[in-house]
Amino acid sequence: MRRGAMRRTLLAVFAHPDDESFATGGTLARYAQAGVRVVLACATRGEAGIVHEEGVPPPKDMGKVREEELRCACRVLGVEELRFLDYRDSGIAGAPDNDHPRALIRADPEEVVSRIVALFREFRPEVVVTFGPDGGYGHPDHIAIHNHTRVAWERADALERPPRKLYYLARPRGALRRLRLKMWELGLIDRPPDEEEIERFGLPDDQVTTQLDIRPYLEVKRQALRCHRTQLPPNSPWLRLPPEEMVELWGYEWFTLASGRGVSFGGAEDDLFAGLE
Image: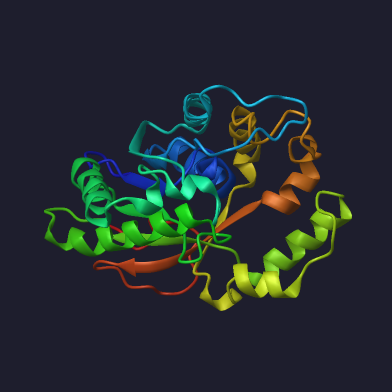
């Protein structure tokens, strides 16, 4: 960063506690350690989550517990500002939580968009990261926060300093196929790669614009995941992977540059801030 230059800011907009660590833990840690101000907006507190450790009863206030888990992960990753949009976890498609009056999927779109635009105005991020149109794996809240963030990006044209680059999470089909095969070989999943799922949840490799090398930050990502104890218990095989397997499974995080302001895409990127002065 040039002497006297304004500090760069990255804003990640997600739906639930743990989205930030699973999807972008290495990315957030990488930029935080490089001196970028990393801001996280979380739409809900994960109230509809379940405890994934066998024999452990759910807490009385899941939202409060998961908020504390998220704050723990933010400290580990180096996130400087955490803002909740104060909606409720809608749960998976068809769940009773879908009908809760404060569920994110029932929220007034104009209200959600205005809250995200307010974050653009307050923090002036150059880069914004969120889910792609499929929400990663089709979760209704993930799709909702994608839609609201995309509209907020469009509305940001009216701001004095709008964001410059909008990225969606991406998984190239080739890498996703290799990942699923390795997970099956390690016993992390109970069946080999399903080509229909690969096609549904992965992107053609040539549509993935940006690959970030997060190998130096894998241990930070693992420690952030440890914070989410209700979602990833201590005995999870994911947390017990040897370092060489961690590198193979989690060594990179991918994105698609969805839109840019005054930025020309000149080929494959290895930096979310590429092309910015």
